[in-house]
Amino acid sequence: ADADHLKTAEDADHTAGAGFTFFTIDPSDHVDQKADHYDDEILSEKFGAIAGEFPWVDEYIGEERTLPSGTVIRFDERSVRRAAVKYGIALREAIRLASYIHKKCEMLGTAYELEISVDETEQPTTLVEHYIVGDQCRVNGVRLVSLAPRFIGELEKGVDYIGDVNTFERSVVDHATIAEMLGPYKLSLHSGSDKISIYTAFARATAGRFHVKT
Image 1 (cartoon, rainbow, N blue to C red):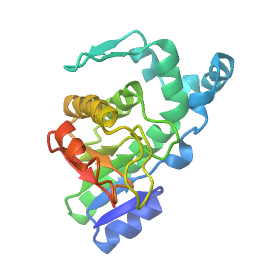
Image 2: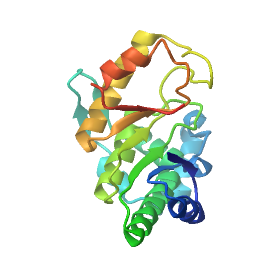
Image 3: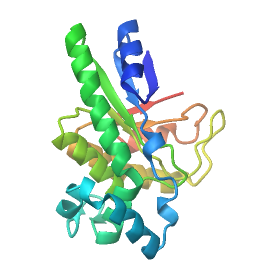
Image 4: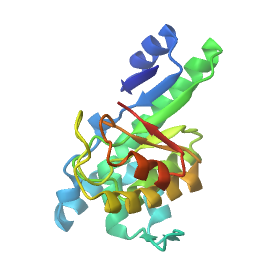
């Protein structure tokens, strides 16, 4: 049973107390849904308002990661700053709640599994954004069993995938590589009901390390 869409410590108290052992943290209230549409001027302004809160930004700028697929993840200043504006506060709150869940379950003497969802956005999660989220979870001691990025295409409840399946699979291969590097953790497909056309591709791209939420 999945204690889904957890946003507060009170949510964790209620669900852990009821016996749940799988927790999905949903920090979507803190995601800047407009970040992908900001021009350089607005992005600079938005980043300036939070710059001092996220020292990890400077650690990533200028870095590169080459994946086995040949894809190169370039952590240029714009993409890292956009990641901070889009996900920075959400990531911080998710890590805080993850720590609270850990302490709560430790107090109760129960094992648990933890998922973080960052799929509640109109625009897909970039590889830079996924890497930063996964890496910051790792360095802060959050052991993810799964992460739900926002995949390309349209994932609407109760209908099949809308988009090109081959393009979806190529994208998932790179996301799965990041999950393997930083975890390993599963990739979670949210709004996963009736996505008949992509189940095989999703399983193949993740080498079987996946979770489907319906």
